[in-house]
Image (cartoon, rainbow, N blue to C red; front, side, top):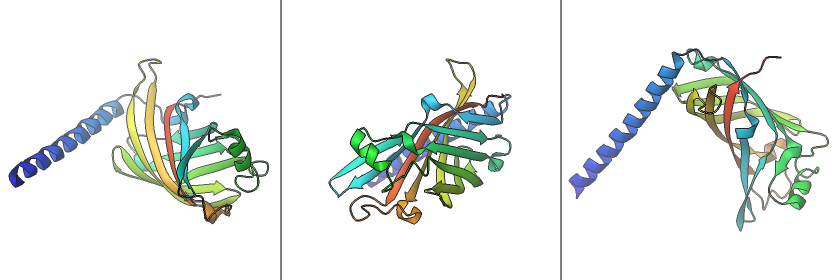
Length: 207
């Protein structure tokens, strides 16, 4: 049984490595083609989500409907990547209107005074062709603090629908809302809030 377990583990490791190498080669192949270096979020395929624990009884999930973002990215110099996101706080959506209205008040996001949250990258470190640690300045309720996101480039290819290049990505991190002075119900609702951004980037439009 011990030998069987070792063989199974070894096979799993080889398969994982093979998938990673295949994916990395695909990225390298795409990199050889002419790709834009200036990108913008495709709003129809982007979601900024979060979740909080409610009194230990349940998990409440939500997202923001409106987000704009740009990315300066060149596969040949990935660590020089720059990204900027602007999230409309009034677009919060937790699938319950009364809760959303409360979240928009001064107890939480105070959208009348602070209509946006922003993230501006300051350092990007790709530790393999698809994954990076991205540190930046995150601004919430008028206060700016460092935030680190784990970013994965899921796929870079031409869309079969538009025939144009697309970058698919996921970014995850955690925000300590108390550090930004959002302290309401800190004893019952999560203060360390996990966030997840899933999205697609397309070539930035020139005006």
